[in-house]
Each structure stands twice: as structure tokens, then as C-alpha cells.
Length: 240
Image 1 (cartoon, one colour):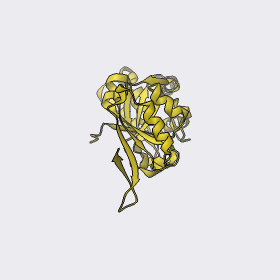
Image 2 (cartoon, helix red, strand yellow):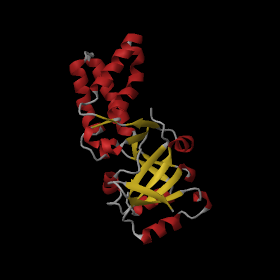
Image 3 (tube, rainbow, N blue to C red):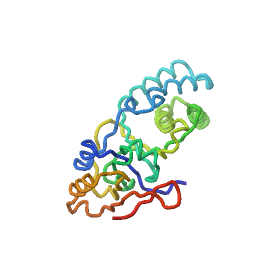
Image 4 (cartoon, rainbow, N blue to C red):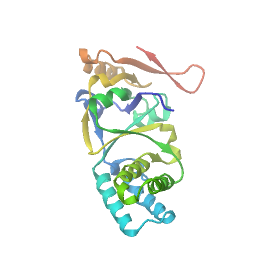
């Protein structure tokens, strides 16, 4: 059972990252803009086809489902986080090869102050997530007529599609926050609990970032410096 309340956002030191902190806004992107070609809008029709091939659903019901899913998927926003701060690949891919930084958020505080959003931990597998969806259909069929529960299954289908990625992405340990509308979502400074500097982050950039966040409302932040672990291929974080 997942118990961690920490969400980590890996960032390069650039205008966009500075704006995130100064403007106190997280960007919830359209699914079509995500960086994996097998993501959400690009794969969900394939997921539905796999469902229809293995589960008999009336054609008119299929059409109703797809039309509503098209609408909902085109409107929602996704903001991706990791559950780990120690992954070297994440630092390389998303923090400008360790020249950036990593922001630690408290998920509970975000929910209380910035909602509403759903939190979806990502599952990693080679198969499309059609089996999860078929199980939900069967659950509704065994408990009440499908016509009366059709509205309830949209969220289940979207959660399965949004919350499933190919096995090779497992190292990300991703959790996705999902809103009904894409765009920016404001957060309170108290939602940020830590900032860690990358191994190669320039001293000037560190000074700049600390100056930007030197007002009392940011005084609670714990600052860390990433260092190479002494006895293994890994990272350690020293409080500064």
C-alpha cells in the first residue's frame, strides 16, 4: 500500500520553471501533448478496440461510450509527478542532465488547497489495459443493469487509459494528477516542502533560485544538494 505523500517535479533551470514557482501555478497539459506516442488519446481507441474484440457490447453502446470519452479526454488536464527524487534517469531526462532542480510537493496539502483533481498512480505493463476495463463492465453488469451505470464507467475507462504506461517507463514511478479541464492550477507555497539542486546545477542558478524564494511564505522549504553516493551508483541528498 502506498503511504508516501511526496510528489516530485523534476525541472530544468529555465523561464518556465521559474514561472512555475513565482506564479505558483502547475500546468495540466492536454493528453495529446504528452511525450509518449502510446499515451492517452493516441492509444485509447486501440484500447477500446481490444475491449470490443473480447467483450460483446452493443454497437450503439460502443458509440455512446466513445463519443463521451472523446469529449472528456479532449477537455481534461494531466500534471505528472514522480514518487522518487533519487532516480538518475529522471534527473538526466527532465532536469537538464542534473543541471536543474527537483521540487518536492506534499500531495495532501495540494489536495486541500489546490483541488479539485484526481490522483492516479501509474501502472506499468506490456499489454494495453483492456482487461481492467472488461472487469469493470462485468462488475457493473453483475450488480445493476449497464444502462443505469453507464455514467459510472467513463471514469473507470479514463483512469485505466491515463494510469497505464509501457513497462519501460517503470523507472519514473509516476503519479498523475488529473483535472476536468486542462490549463493552469494555482498552488499555495506551503504545498512545496523541498527543493533539491542537481549535481551539476550552476552556483549562480542556485543563488538566483534561493533569492526568488526568500520571502517568509517560502521559509519552511527544506533545501538539499544532490551528491554522488559514496559506495554505490546512486544519489544522496544533503540538507543545506
